[in-house]
Image 1 (cartoon, rainbow, N blue to C red):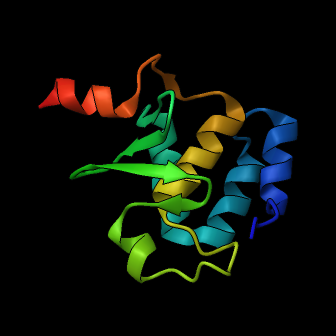
Image 2 (cartoon, helix red, strand yellow; image 1 turned 60 degrees about the vertical axis):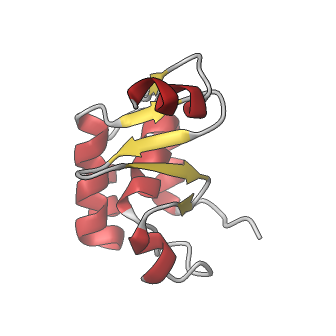
Image 3 (cartoon, rainbow, N blue to C red; image 1 turned 120 degrees about the vertical axis):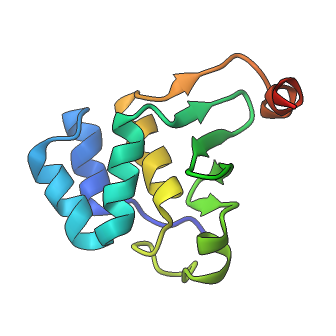
Length: 117
């Protein structure tokens, strides 16, 4: 099942940037998760590889595919059937890719992980 984009996602795609109005919409729907996502985008912590989008969290990196994420919040606390219930990593990936603010790497993520170890 593919979830429909939320209204703020349409507005973001149209604006091409995080306007104050869109930030307010994100915060009103997603609260603290939205705030963390916006911070991650502003801090350049969303990375796009050939195979995955990765968000650098405070303790690890999390793979995001669509609205799904490898973080514990997504695995245990969120309702997958609720399109407003997303972890901040998935929100950051959506925002960053929509406005073209990801750091892009012409590498496979698994190759990058091997280089970091």
